[in-house]
Image (cartoon, rainbow, N blue to C red; front, side, top):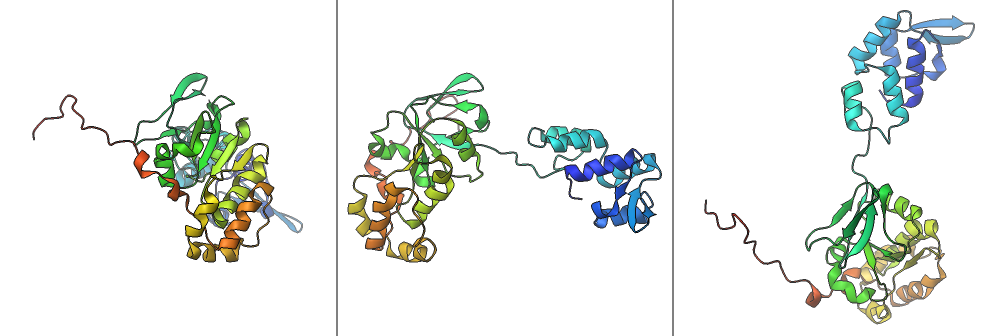
Length: 303
C-alpha cells in the first residue's frame, strides 16, 4: 500500500461511515477489501462509490492487514512526515519504515582553522581533528558569522586534505569548507537560508562549470556565489586531460555560460581541449604530519 495523506483521508472517511467515489480509490488493496467484504460497492446511477458496512470490522482489517492501529494518528504523522520520527511511526503503526523517510540529513564541514559557529543557539567551534570531519545534521539550526566564506569542495580527496591547499585560499579570512557529497539538497537549502558568500571549488573542466551553474549559481546568483579560479589555472590547463575534455564536450560543449566571469575559463578549456582536475592543487609537502602513536592508558597492553 502506498501510504499517502489522500489515501488515509479516504480511509478515515470510510471508517466514520462516509462514502468514497470508486474513481478515487483504485488498486490491489481496494480489490482485496472488496473481496474480503470490508468494503462494499454502492451504485448511484452510473456512479459507483465505496462504503464500509461495519466500521469496527473495517478498522480491525486495517490493523491486521496493514498494521494501521490508529487512523487519526497515522494521518497526522503523514501530514507531518518531515517532523515525525521513526520512533513515532513505530509507536503508532508498529513499523519504523511505515513511509519512506530520509533519516540522515545534513552535510560535512571541514576547516584548517577555528571557525566559530552556532548550533541550536549554542556556540561551537568547527576545526575537526586531522583525519576527521564534522557532520552537521540539524543544518537548519546551524549558522556561522556573515564574514565566513563558504567554500564548496567537489571531490573527496580535496575535501579531506584541505589543509594542504590553504595557500589557495589566503584571500579568505575565515573559510569554512563544505562537501558536495552527499548530494541530498540540504547544502543548497542551508546556503539559501544564510547570508554567507559561496565559492565553488571544483574541477576546471566543462562538467565542473556545469555543476556550479546548475546546482548553485542559478539559485544563489552572482552576488552570492562564484566559481573559484586560481591565478595559475591557465598555465596548468595545457597539462590537463584531453580524454576528459573529449568525453565531456558532447554533453557540455555548447552549454550556455550564464556567469560571464566564467567565460575566460570556458574559452580556455575549449581552446586547449583540456580539463584540469582540482586534485592537482593538493600540495603534498603541506600535508600535516601523521599523528604520533597513542600512548594513553592501555596502549601497551599485550594480549
